[in-house]
Image 1 (cartoon, rainbow, N blue to C red):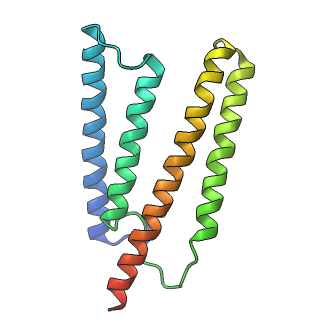
Image 2 (image 1 turned 45 degrees about the vertical axis):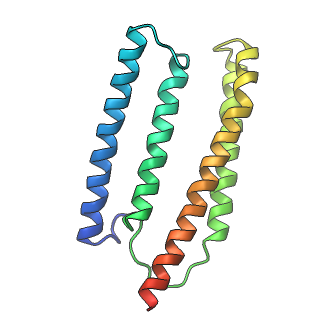
Length: 148
C-alpha cells in the first residue's frame, strides 16, 4: 500500500479505521480467551486466532476501500484487472506452498493437514476475490463521481 499519495483526510481516516480494527481484534481475542477459559471451544486453538485475524483483516481492508483511504488519487488511467488476477494467483500459490511446507515439516499428522487444505485454499482465494472485486467496484464508483 502506497501511503505517500494519501492526503491528510485520507491518512486520518486510515489511522482511525486502523485503531478501531485493532481494538476490535483485541476485544475479539479477549472474548475468545474468556470463552476458552469457561470451556467453550468453537474451533481448536491455532485456527480460532487465524479465523479472528482473517475476518478482522478483511473488515479493515473493506472499510479502508469504502472510506477511499486505501490508495491516493492517480493521475493516469489504470487497468486493474491484470493486477487483480496476479494478486489472486499469488495468494493461491502462497497458500499451496504453505500447505506443502507444513505437510512436509510434519508439525502435525498428515490427516489434519489434508483436512485443512481445501478450506485454507478456498478461503484464501475467496478473500482475495472479494477484496479485488470490492476494490474495482468502489474505485469505479468513486472515479465516476470525480469525473462528474
